[in-house]
Length: 436
Ligand code: SF4
Image 1 (cartoon, helix red, strand yellow):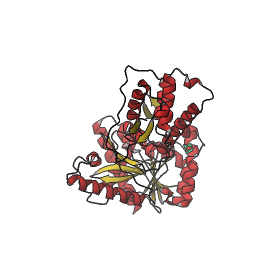
Image 2 (cartoon, helix red, strand yellow):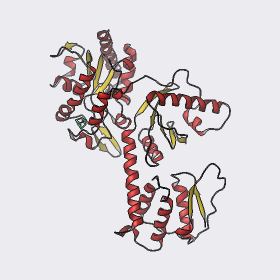
Image 3 (cartoon, protein in one colour):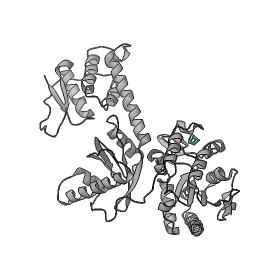
Image 4 (cartoon, helix red, strand yellow):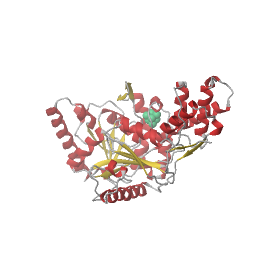
């Protein structure tokens, strides 16, 4: 009985190569034993040599590539059996009452659903790595969907350095290459994940420095060195540290108040320390925020970070959120282009902004852009006329209007852009004085 040992739980190439050789050599399914390589295994597979090729329906290949990621030890045999039967002339995909086909569909569906769930549930910590930001997230997938999801995120955000850790293994993207390494069991909280990352990072550096060839270490840094400060960057406490807000966040995740939930990946709530006296309000999550699940981590967020730093505001001390919690976009080719939310969407989502305001009770609201101002003041606002002049709202709370940092990114002329940036920093300096 031929034993086929695959290189990993998702070794699609290995399974396909073996399947092709076995089918062509007429090895029946019941004669093949499938296994996944353990560390102890040292040899390759001795595959029978077969001649010519054979045709398998494209849909079957697609379903098989999904089902291969299922956490089901029998899947390799099931997939081989279906390919074998298709090659024998059976129209397996057209059968209405076939156990193998039903199982194939069930596994493919479960994998697709879990891949989506993982992208929706993943929350990333922003950790510092040699002056860069790296986003580290942990998730325990029900199926082997880490690799496919990591590839998808790397394709969509090539400039974003990220690591995804799961009990099965970790995926690390360095901007050019995706590498896979060891995993980790559950973390009790974000701080534990940050500590694990710090230790992991330091270990990789030590081993790389000792001359060991460690693919992960190569992928993490061009010239690895240990972090000279704690790996956890700005300590941004997710708002759901508060059990009351956790309820709100969970409810918002299922919110159907407006149609924006239909296409976005997830709700993106605000974040900042409990007791923050200032709440910055933007428009809505962008493309990156939608996937990562955190506000202001994309280009506009980086612009805001820079301006805050210049103005002397520590982002760790303020709460940052958006008026609308779901990403609104339109597709252009494969790209998701931002679309401004309409008044009814702003009005619908004001409910969640009010939840945040009631729970945080900030002394000062910084309204960045027309959408934020409209959401809070419940009227259209001309930014040019109202910016830079703090005022008290009807409930006595102090408010301050300025531009949204994404406005600065859109100014086409470099001189004008620099002028606008200086004006934004001046606004933030005023905010800092109001905070005192
Ligand atoms: S955008 Fe706001 S109101 Fe609309 S579905 Fe999302 S959370 Fe609900």
